[in-house]
Image (tube, rainbow, N blue to C red; front, side, top):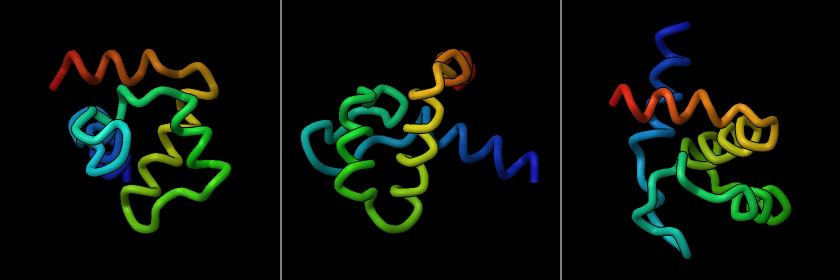
Length: 74
């Protein structure tokens, strides 16, 4: 289970946004305002929506340092 959680966090720092205003930008680099917009309008279905929802939780709770440290490891 821990390995699965690590893989998900690594996805946040390696996967790029596939569409929209921030297409091509790493998920971890998306601004909180964009994630808040998704929260209001609804996250996409599937894994991308799960990743964006988790990212919103991480960023809105001030846990960005986790992402910055992982970005250095990749």
